[in-house]
Image (cartoon, rainbow, N blue to C red; front, side):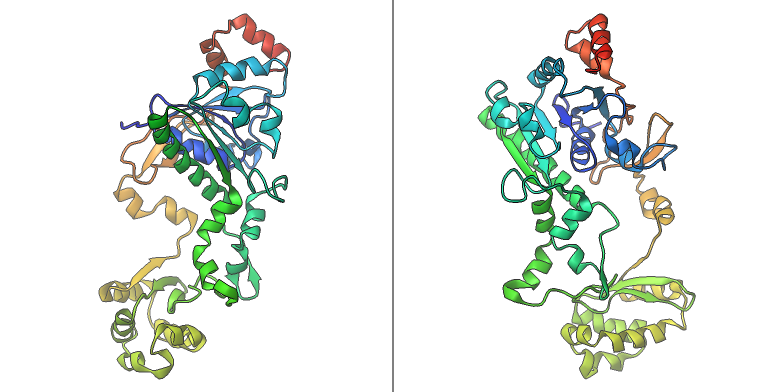
Length: 390
């Protein structure tokens, strides 16, 4: 098994999605991730739902291959434990409430004096300064602030993405910046601070609609599951009540689509549809013609014509369909991961043929072992438990 980050230790004061998603990627590559959780309940994402044999879907997704250490970081007796952990760590990741890390003395300015090689990655909603610094931020709120909701949905209503895209964006930029910082440290010998904002991460993903609306121009219209500016590109019903998603990219494909899929080659030269801008402007009428042609065919027949013509297409899959997706099965992308409630399937990280995919931890499962590693005796650990520090 390839573990390029084996030997790297990450301490994470993490909760919810963005930071746990980041550190899970590091764990996938072999890093040791020590996840600090509140004594008792742990990361509040553990209680989001109980859909995975009683465990939270979000937590199972973002927390495999980690060690769970319960520690009340506000307790007077927690500071020596944190110091001992950070003395051995390469990376500290935190997404506590705005300003909390600094109040605990866990900001880079304070830590770098004692731990010169430590990389500190702060993940927040809006960044370490500016007028929004102290504003609470959750995925839906950042999707709204970033403009994502304004260009997603139907003409009547903007909608959020069905996945936590703002959290995922921040987690992935934190992950990639940490990898770069580790390379930089191998050259400089020093750690650094990384300041990741959910807003900036999500706005980076908004590059196309931002530039489309450049200099006061109209933004791309909300078009449901269809492409906002390319047509035909989106979902179309077939005669058996199913839906086929198709996408045309250029004029050559448009001509082939008319001739081989719609079996109406003259349509390609129609003045209302002579180029993409015209097709997009006249999409209602064009859609009616495509739907009428597809009404005589079932989804398999439409897909067969599209494939034969070299036109990109896809099924509109449900979650059940994705679990059983033949391509993922053929490429052997599923593995089994242990959890406190038994094994569950988990997707191999993209790009990996093998990866570290160790169990999802129970709350505080590794507290005793980690503290013993730091030199504490069983009696000292029990004393910390007795005062509620761990």
